[in-house]
Length: 433
Image 1: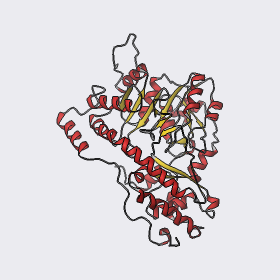
Image 2: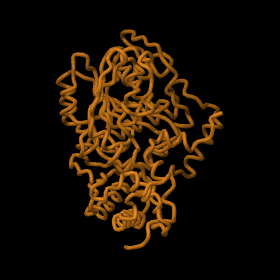
Image 3: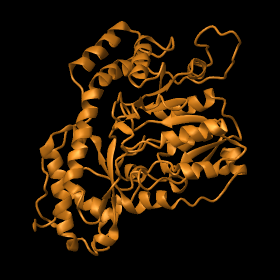
Image 4: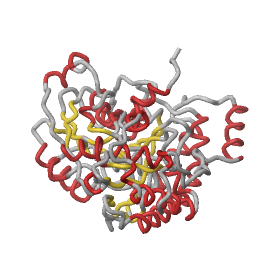
């Protein structure tokens, strides 16, 4: 290609914006207007009308019987753990490479998150290491379906069944995805989804727990609804609850977001496959292998590996800065090893069980992925057409062909790419008050 890199003053490959996210039309506008005029806005009675309908439709779409719509995706993890009886001192196995909320949910119910490294081919939790981490105090496993890959649910389900552990799928990236024909979240004992702004379906915020266990579903509703029971039960099951309900505004939007999901999932799957065709042979990049058991791919982000030694020794952050300068949205330190994260920062006294069970973690794959190796491309890139994907591939090839221009290059843009999402948000945000 030979043209100067945009980071060095050249013309960027891409000057037009990629498809905007979130996507909406008159359906959401009409639905919001109807809720507004109904004056029935909140989450009580729980579930309220739109929330009940959405919970049912979303669960059915993913092959589960029950869906309880709640305030957000961290809350949905916490509720599922609490409803399953996970309590103070119990151990919950979580991947070391994920959003901090996965581990925080265990802390919020008084349990101890136990970090396990991830598989380098998927960046999802490594089943062999899960088996090795189980102790007499282990009560649950939370596999995270990360980016556009599934955790190995065949292995994990067998491990959980063999040790009588609660298996909770963190599906914040997996809306509409299927593994061996089964919907995300319906394979384990329960599944948790997020509807935060960046997710594959969104109402700005929101979450859901799906399950095939009616008693678990009842207890999720009870805890989310200030301790009120969901239905008459043969025996009382009291709980001190929170108000974690979803509003009718959120549920009304999500009903129409769900209508769009099948077509958007199919388009993302096709466009990520086209990107792979365009970058498969780029020296210094390696693609996460396809798993034939993923029968429908949900692509929250497309993730590939960057290898510094084949790029003249430049750091991943320099590559990410150069790719952004060419007009391609991307990230490097999207996630980091949770136990090293600035957001996973608290005193041991705040969570006594954690403080009483402090341990050292060494999860080299998670560390390498977070700080040196992974590159994340957001899902809205893949809602466009083949020319959009071609621009992404062209930008990557341009950087590879001009990599010598980045050797030794060190500026503020590259430094910022080395910050976590939380640190960049603080750097770029206005004062909160």
